[in-house]
Image (tube, rainbow, N blue to C red; front, side):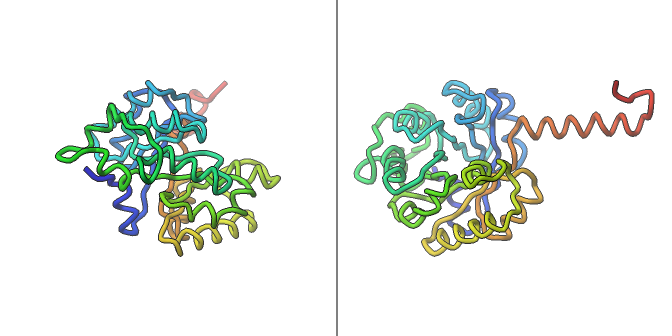
Length: 261
């Protein structure tokens, strides 16, 4: 079995990624039916834990989406555990230098490329006719998050660590670290210049850049700019936006009798 999201990236296509903050297998099942190329369980800022991650993977299992996880931190115990639990890739927050990038790779890959411990309790099923261990290092996506000035300053060293697949930019923390308001769809010239630099540095190494977005329009614009992995919001924000739009449409169309208050 291959990592379908990684195959798309190798072919130069964009991966449109869903994001799960809600700890529910049913929510994950609904999201997986929505056409995403991959779906990421957010264990950092989402309301997720390890068991809810497994439930989400169960919910997504019938659909052709690639299961990914954003881990809470760059710590080998949880990284190995989410991979053993069935994740095809790891997005890791706050990777700021070469040593931290190497720590991430070591946790994600089996020897001799890394130091991951053997025990793929769920992901072993992905091996099918061959062993999971023989394909894992080639198929797992290793994605450090670039979120600080330190990471920007060290981007070359981070990208040159063997085993790094690409990067994932967190616009809120990146802006926050530069003294700006934390938000997603950024228009500051300084941020856009940083995006251009990161795209250049990843492209010349044959790697990809990913970005978290607040709207579909901005995500599409970023794909045209060169990003090859884009996320829009998360399941809870998408649900809220759709619900609010529905309520507002009813009130606006029905008139005063349906008005709030």
